[in-house]
Image (cartoon, rainbow, N blue to C red; front, top):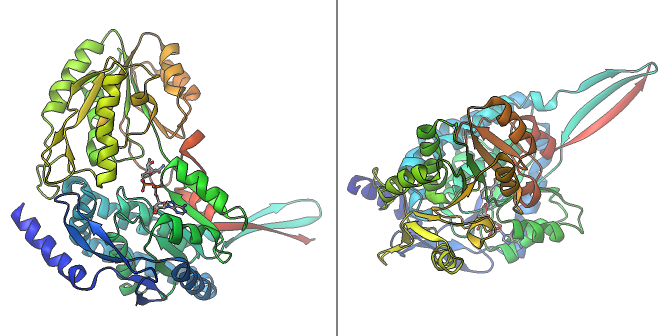
Length: 489
Ligand code: NAD
């Protein structure tokens, strides 16, 4: 731990001196609205000042992205691919710095964030390799026409990201946008600005031309809002809360903005009594207590068949009570602090809400110390699906366990939520797995597995969990316009 803290302090010293500036057209720029402070959830200390951008900064960044667009769009695909591969290598070379900064900024633990930094590199590498595929036209025959369908990058785009695993999520949006030939204005979450700064710096050092990726820090209601309204910005890739997704859809209406929304979730994991229960137990724990439970795809609702409920919950309580909460840079820590005071207050408010609703706090349900925003991992039992703890996205290390007796009942409860991002089904009955997954309302479902991201597959949710998909070719569909040309033959 002390070696990691020493390294972190080395990496942070430059930010302590200069703060985090916006990056527009390859230049460091102060924020027109002054600065705001980034606070570490580990000990509530100020990490550094951050440039607070507003309308004029977004306008400057959008102009930079528009100016840089024609040259980036027209750059031969293989040259663009070379640059993006260099960005991937450069991310890998600074993976430790990214991981340590991300942990300090967000409270996420090193054991997970060291992998997230490498996944950021993988996002660049994967979409670099797809660069040529994104341009392939389709040649369709008809009696009188030779039909050519091709794709063009849509133009400068806005990317708005949240504070949970911010580096990985930013690369997940920015890499395909750049690969498609779009230029980008990125508005990172105000609560986690560090690694967005590292990303733009790394990308430029790796050869990304100035203005192709611009970063404007600031709050959602001014910098973010302006980005969604700016006429030069052709599309918004947004990751965040469902409520915000709805607001920015309205904000983008006047300029007919194309929107891709990755929003909240209250994802069920359904465990039938014929499942491999040891593996299911591991996965249930991993999918809610890793990454501080601050994960859109976390399975925060356990639907457990009543025949195995008692045994499963008993084992669950024992495991949850053994989870290590602590300093995020300590390699043995499994859960770090909650990202901000506001979010900590939200997560801990559910400890009382659960009791008021009549549920049992079977594990956790308490704050840990007051130096930072730490909580014990929490399990609620004796719950039903109508309770707030079963319906609302808590977005912390908090699991609600609900019993069911029949498959029909499990399906009804699984679907009885406004969300539909992911679902996890544990059963050894293949026919049931097929039947159940076919009716489960979710964009992504895993059977007998935790969430395993495979980049070519579509990622996204239904209902209040989002609109649109990315991953593989779906990303290019979003960042590009389809164009059809018919030649008379
Ligand atoms: P949030 O919606 O509060 O903020 C996300 C981003 O939107 C921030 O950068 C914020 O500044 C910006 N923003 C806020 N108001 C805006 C406005 N009016 N106009 C433009 N931009 C605005 O979300 P959060 O609290 O940072 O993140 C947590 C949420 O993100 C959770 O609901 C989680 O489920 C969701 N999430 C979803 C996915 C997914 O893939 N579906 C992935 C990660 C997180």
